[in-house]
Image (cartoon, rainbow, N blue to C red; front, side):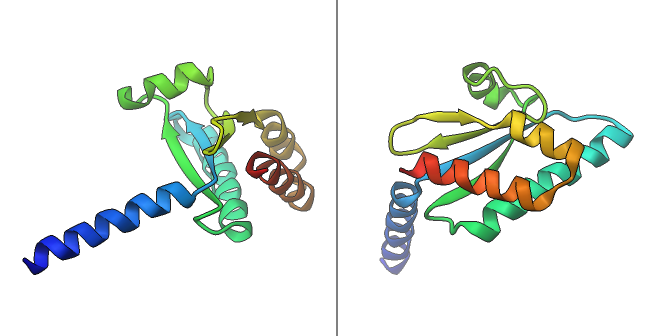
Length: 128
């Protein structure tokens, strides 16, 4: 009986957390060999870090989406994703903002302050 109560409570908490969450930052990633992979991993780590340091899990969450995983094929098609495509999806209205151009600009400039500001602004835009 106690196990059922604990299980139901856990399910309710998971349901509430998914309702409260307002945006997802989807980072589409391909499995690349060697040097490009290191650069891609660093870029992904920066995006994830900025999302997690500026937003709590109820507001925005970072999700890595492996492109080669068949389970993600619908998302890849929906957002026409390639490696390092980054899309912010509003959970309230299913509106998507592709910020891949901002990420690409950051990968060249390495200006973390500018990139973080632009990323946070786009996430805030998706939450409204």
